[in-house]
Length: 192
Ligand SMILES: [Ca+2]
Ligand SMILES: [Ca+2]
Image 1 (tube, helix red, strand yellow):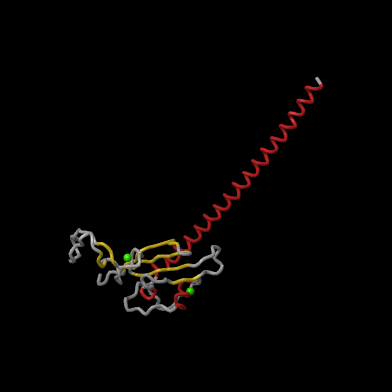
Image 2 (cartoon, helix red, strand yellow):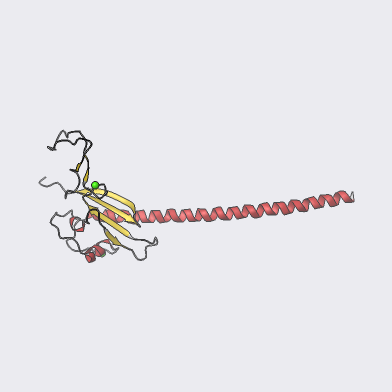
């Protein structure tokens, strides 16, 4: 009887040690998963914040007058005043004045106090797909109305009719080199 009891108490000690080990392992696993959940929800919150801010810039650029092709290019100081987060804006600013060179740097700036650390870049030009060229392959279909230019041959690289125009402009916002928001804006129709 004694032997049995000893054996049984020995077994339960082993049981306790094993289950404690399982507990420790489980708790460790839990801590790791809680940490990674916290990390990913932090990253998601940051992504949302970046996207919201990017849409704010897009909205602002949709809200200014479109302007004309001959508009004087904004100075760096005017661009900084345009993109900063106060209510003032440079006088007479327009989308055309804020154009940036095709296949070149856009307006680059940082925002102090913005939680996600990085550099914003805003490209504004007639390179509608942002691929750095105004050339591409034109399709073989002839427009039924409006266009009078002959259709493309579907094979050779030619100047795109839609790109490089002053009446249609791409607005694209990048954060740390990654495109976050993009839209196209067309000039108001004249004479209507
Ligand atoms: Ca301002
Ligand atoms: Ca292009």
